[in-house]
Length: 217
Image: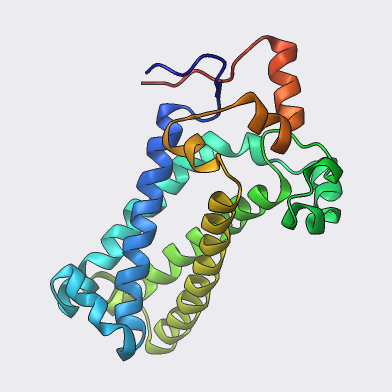
């Protein structure tokens, strides 16, 4: 894949594929899950061929999501290790929200907000997986008691709501910060974007003479 002259490689091919598989599965889970959550959302079941199909495919999509997110953990955990820059960035959130980037502390490849999304989902995805397995009647109904299933359903619902809220913040931030979507669709950003939003990351690329990690096939 070719990139414009001077472009900085932000995400490799495998990282982008991994991300979009996870994102696609998450959207399908939200739609199918909401169709079972409350009658007002039941019309969403038509997207899957009806209520029975929505209920049948929901847990299988969940398994794909869990496997895909495990791949994201493997690929992204190093960039998401908290450091001192995160505290400084969080203190400057008002400036971040008003696009006053000149008064926001410099950060590396990821800021505290992005790391927060990553670690929140790293906690929520396993919670959804385990609680989902406990209420998967077809395969585990005979092995779990009714009180256990009720408790798991409650945990699953709360975790799902939390995950949806995190996802909304993630999508909003990606759209709000111009140029961010291109980093995950085409894999590259401009030096100007890096200087404005992730200045320490840009400095590290300059110091190493690297445009960033090359995409893997």
